[in-house]
Length: 156
Image (cartoon, rainbow, N blue to C red; front, top):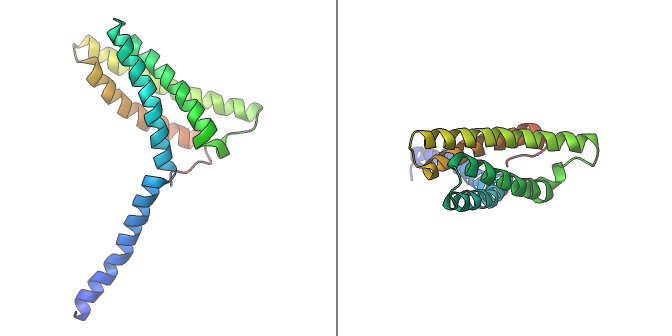
C-alpha cells in the first residue's frame, strides 16, 4: 500500500474508534438505561391509555390518566434504579428534587393532554396523536430531568 492510502486509513481509525466508543456508550451506558426505563413507563402509560379509550373515556382524559400512571412508574424506576446515586438524602433537598421531577412531569402531562385533545377536536386519530406526544414529551422531560432534577446524572 502506498503512503497516501495508508495515511488515509490511519486517519480514519480515530474516527472509527470514537464512533464505536460513542455507540457503545449509547447502547450500554446511562442513556440506554434511561431509554429502557422510559420504555417501561411508556408501557404503563400507553396500556392505561388504550384501556381507558376502549372503556369509552374521552381521549384527552385517557391520555392524562395514562401519563400520570407512567410518570409514577418513571419516578420509581428513576429514583430507585437509574439515578439512585443522584437522589438527594431525605430532607429539603430531596423534596426539592421531587418537586422538580413533578414539574417536569406536569410539563409532559400538559404537552400530552394538549396534543391528544387538540387532535381529537380535529378528528385526528388519538392513537397517532399520542405517538407524537410521547416523542415530544420524552425529549422535553428527559432534558429537564437531566438538567434540573438529577443534575449529577450523565447520559454517557
